[in-house]
Length: 94
Image (cartoon, rainbow, N blue to C red; front, side, top):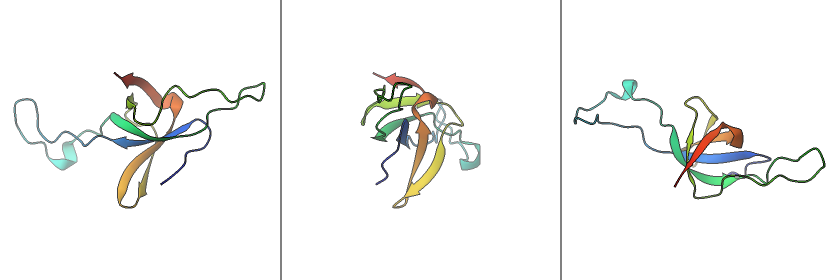
């Protein structure tokens, strides 16, 4: 598994929606990228101006909402993840 550095997090995106609310199937090339996923790994946090580590706002296991084009896609053991900065995360789903 990957261990993110600094203020980066590793996110497992949710699967893309394959059906509309009315039950119609969406073609794979028309499916939107998911903007929700689960935090798999978290870096140690950003180093502040005084040299101390700033605590991360998210933790492993959190389900989060992030920007549509946030992060970099990485593949590990056949699984696709997003590696992104914590600042690219908009909200934690509670």
